[in-house]
Structure formats: structure tokens, C-alpha cells
Image (cartoon, rainbow, N blue to C red):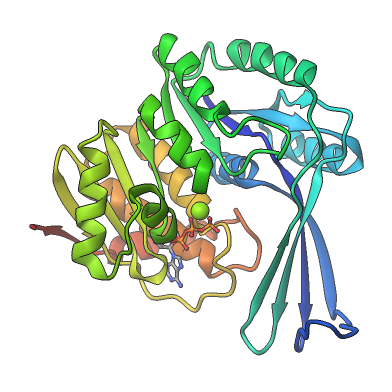
Length: 310
Ligand SMILES: Nc1ncnc2c1ncn2[C@@H]1O[C@H](COP(=O)(O)OP(=O)(O)OP(=O)(O)O)[C@@H](O)[C@H]1O
Ligand SMILES: [Mg+2]
């Protein structure tokens, strides 16, 4: 069983339009409402590959119900903690001129009592899980240090934590030494407090994080693929070329792929090919967290992994 934790889930609203112009009336050609939030997307990918998943986190209101229904429909165990506030919507506007505009709400107010209930649900919910995946942002009213607490609680129970978050949430929790982190370049820059240009600087920054006791550092570099550091060894997997339709959420598919690879006992090279294959296939679809599995399999075969020395 794999546990995913989504403290700030969202209904993903995807609009398509010809052009999106700020400050003007914009008519949309289509709209779709889908259950989202990073941990929910990870769960979607894991369920497509038929891994048992338990979803934890905070859910409230009508948006919360939509997410609860979806999570149950895909066959994941839904163990979200109910909250009084309304789960947020995240808006993604895809315009035909190639621009992608995202509007991200901060999330509902969460009370201290709700957090206490969540912590109890979390401790209970991870008991029979080997891996715990913490993904995404944290609602504004919750301490940015909460992931540090969740990592410590998981470590006490000998669970391995995969952490995919950004900014202060990542920086605050790194000292708790999650088993794996998956920053993109911007997140790695913030974490290491440096500007990063090119593969060499990316590798140097990732090695510095690995040296701080993070066993697996996977840096996702968009269409440039993944740079991976483990025990000081650096590998780079090139992203297979695809016609990308929507790259939002590709990072979530990398995290899901890493979790599956870990549970299957894949070696590093196989794991990286699996990660870039699944995430490139995800980039080729409009919907976050939906993997065309045949395409993913073909892309994995084509993927190339090389060793890098500093
Ligand atoms: N255009 C693309 N073509 C092929 N593969 C891609 C493309 N964009 C992303 N990927 C794959 O997806 C992985 C994750 O993408 P990215 O680095 O954009 O993650 P991210 O910034 O964390 O995204 P998000 O947080 O929205 O999930 C990349 O490492 C790469 O393997
Ligand atoms: Mg990401």
C-alpha cells in the first residue's frame, strides 16, 4: 500500500480558448472539472498501474465531494479528513497561441482542531504503507513546517517519505531528511539559494542536497528530462520527444513512477527510464495524471540514461 497526502487538494478546472487576454472579457471554448491536487494526481497514476493506494489529506465542501467521488471511482482508498472550509479550485487556461495561464487559490482556512484530527488520521493511515508521498502546497492557515512533522512521524514508524513540494514548504522540511525529493529547477534554486544554469550547475546543486542526507534527489528539468543523484553518483535521463499538450502535473507522474519503481525493486537506470517514459506520455495528454500506457511503454524503451561526472 502507498499513501498519498494532499493537504491542499483542488478541483482542476481546465479551460480552452483561442487567446487569453488579461483585463478583458475572455470567452472560453470548453471547460472540464477534474479532481486534482498533486497527491491526487499521483494516486491517479498509481491506480492506472493498479497499485493499492490510500489517499489522505484535507477535504471540504462541494469541491471536496467531487474529489472524494473521483478517488473512490478509481479504486483508491479515500481517507481524507473532513474540514469545514471549501476545497479550492485551480484554473488552467490553455490558449491556442500556446500560452498556459494558471490561477491557484490559496485553499480554505484550517482550524487547529482539524489539523489534530488530520494528524490522528495520518498516523493511522500510514501504518500498513511502505511509502508515504507528501505532495504540493499547504493551505495558508497551516504551519509551513507541517511536512517536517509528517516526515518525523513517518520515520518513527520506519516509513519512507517521498516529498514533492516547493518554496518554503520544501526548505522547512529538508532537515527532516525525506527519503526522496523531486524539485524542478526553480525549486532546487530556492532550496540551495543559488542561480542554476545548465546541467553542470544543476548537478552541483543536486549533489549538495544529496550530501545533506537526502538519499534520492530527482531533479525534473521539463523537456530536458531528469537528473538523479544517489550516493554521490549522478545520472541523467533525457526526456523522450513528444508533442506536449499539457505539461502541468508531469512532476506528479515522475513521483508516482519513482514509487512504483522502488516497490518493484528496479535498478537506477530502469527507474529513470520508467520516470521519463511515464511523464513524457503524461505531457502528451491534456488531462493531468492520465497516462496513455502503451505510449509510456514505447517511450521507456527509447529513453536514454547517461552517467555524469563533475
Ligand atoms: N515537453 C516535455 N516532453 C517530454 N517530457 C516532458 C516534457 N515536460 C515534462 N516532461 C517530463 O516530465 C518531468 C516533470 O516535468 P517538470 O520538470 O515540468 O515537473 P514540474 O515542474 O514538477 O511539474 P508539476 O509541478 O506541474 O507537476 C520532466 O522531468 C520530464 O521527464
Ligand atoms: Mg512539481
